[in-house]
Length: 113
Ligand SMILES: [Zn+2]
Image (cartoon, rainbow, N blue to C red):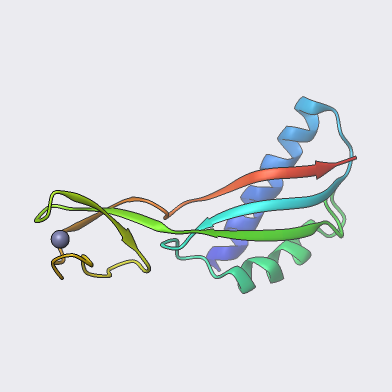
């Protein structure tokens, strides 16, 4: 499952941050998830509880913030907002659209102890 691998990569980031910043517990994680990413928030939540069991982030709260997708329409030569991957350009209806942001996932903030 895609979301399981993503959640395991979150755990590795948390462990690296714990080493760097010398904290031992993670209480909450704010995760930014682009609207164009392939990950399902519900599936991430499910995997998060599973993967964090027995780790420094066991029982941590997970807040998922959706960020809009951005693309570049080659026909309009304009920056456009995309609701979903493979959406046509909202200005001209064309499909010559390159995704420029909103397809990534990143940890925005941590609450630690
Ligand atoms: Zn266009």
